Amino acid sequence: MAAQLIDEDPELAHQHALAASRRAGRVAVVRESVAITAYAMGDFALALRELRTYRRISGSDDQIALIVDSERGMGRPDRALEEARSVDRAALPTATRVALAIAMSGARLDRGETELALGELEIPELNPDLAFDWSPALFSARAAVLEDLGREEEAAFWQERAEVASAALGHGDDEELIIEDAYEDLAEEPEGIEIAESEIAEPDNTESEDAEKSE
Image: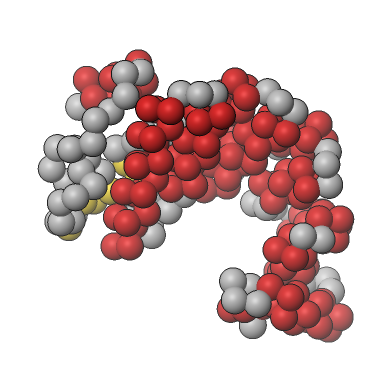
């Protein structure tokens, strides 16, 4: 019930999660639900407490990005980065690893380290021509940091990529997509969706140029 309500009514979702925790407080998923709804409510102290309990019960680091963001919410970006560095990122699922990179980038921004914030997002999953369910958030995070750095053309490119990926992902959250054009109809193929050559001008930067040459 809490998961169904969290987007429409976080407070009610939180109450459902708390009620469940009173009945089954030793069940990992119940503590996870309390943590997520507390985070949605802005109660970062409770979110942290419940996330740590969830991690202890489950033995999983799959909510490490939320732990990092909750530390940020408490105004502790240094602790956030320490938490992030305490896990083996190579052992994390891809979606979790991407979410952690975004959270670490945010912590760098909290410290006023904008260039380092950009560096946190330089991960293998940052490919403007492929979209997965985590791509829109990653692309948007990069766009926001580039805008903070005054690199407006690059920021616009990555924000456009985020919008293209988001639209394309309406065809399947777990599907790999080739996104080369924001404006053509999507054509399903066995291993993804290939779209005609992009009409969106790509900014002059080595990363994007290398990606094009490799094609």
